[in-house]
Amino acid sequence: MHTTHLLYLHGFRSSPQSIKARKMAALMAARYPEVTWWCPQLPPSPRDAMALLTKGTADWPHATTAIIGSSLGGFYASAMAERRHCKAVLLNPAVDPARDLAQFIGEQTAWHNPDAHFFFEPRFIDELTALHVGTLTTAQNYLVVIAKGDEVLDWREMMHRYAGAQIRLQEGGDHALSDFERHVPLILDFLGLTAVRNTACLH
Image 1 (cartoon, rainbow, N blue to C red):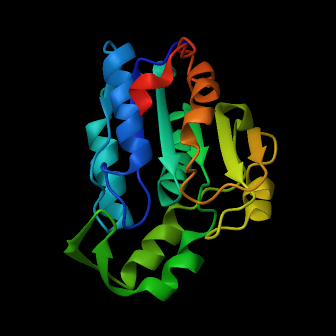
Image 2: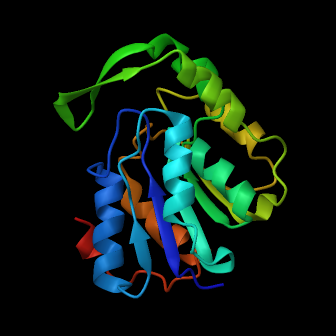
């Protein structure tokens, strides 16, 4: 089914200025201007982030809404997709951020703006735990791009978590998916959008 509304969720310490987010935004503007695109800056609090997303997409049609999430954004995307029963594309998604981010409690800097600081509070770990969803209700709703060379997350854990989903497992690679362009045609096909014939707008 053709996606009419597309939400992009960035990862921990990231922003809408991430390379993948900007490339997708440029592609959507250039080739799919009819698709509603939203890539918000997510607040540090997982509960606040989900509240923002829930309110911002309240009037989006469930049947034709899709979500792309990277790293922690992939965890959020899973939580939203399970609630809305919509499609989700996950890029090296965080599987257990409550465990992994416990070491980051304290003051943090934004990846794309080192002058921007935020405090990752202890209560955010409990908020992440509360957002964890169990077995996926419809694994076919998910496309998961996993790099074996991810230096942050364990690709085996991602494979196990999203068993039954459509998975692209690449040898090597990295957490940022620096070769993101090569995955775009598959992502667009999964979203029901016409395959890109010319990816020049991605560069």
